[in-house]
Length: 228
Image (tube, rainbow, N blue to C red; front, side, top):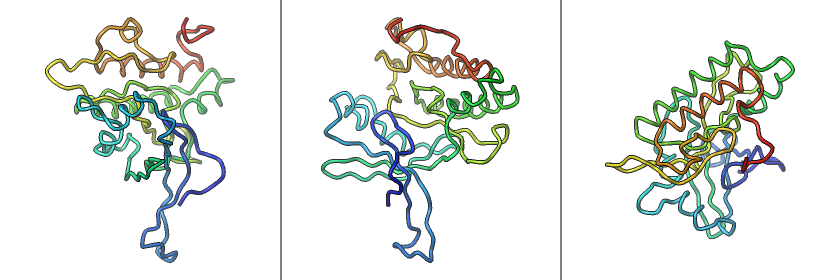
């Protein structure tokens, strides 16, 4: 059951809404669990988006890939519902906001503390090590895709989780290389920009950018446009 009139946020393909899952056939006495649902309107999907979601025979799509991921620092995808118009991805809800807003709230202090920044990196790199061992390349590691697990918990004690696998890919052997240009301007790796084949290190580059931003509240590279 969806809750609220405003979405919690926006993923790569759709809006994310707060929802509830009844524990026992809708019996209120049994209680419920709060989760988040990303609702994707099929009519708005371009052919490339459909391929990213459902796969194309060479690469797994976001749905199948994310369903198989279980890690304490990766947002869990529980189940998927689909009808003629909408695909709904029901996920673990993290209600503490994201790293972007956390850094912005500390901009007047020049960024997060070293203790907090280190904690973010430990949790993020733990998630990336897990993904890269599969191997899965996230390809969109950015501040907006790192969530704080619980509202009201100090940043130095919170749990950080990687979300949004809309750009993720599981490349096939023997090459284990990707070539499609994907990512966000602030965190995309040089080899992706140059159109070269790339691999898991692009996520590590992005993690380094996030560390710089956490400690300084500014991006390491500044431009007036995405193209620049």
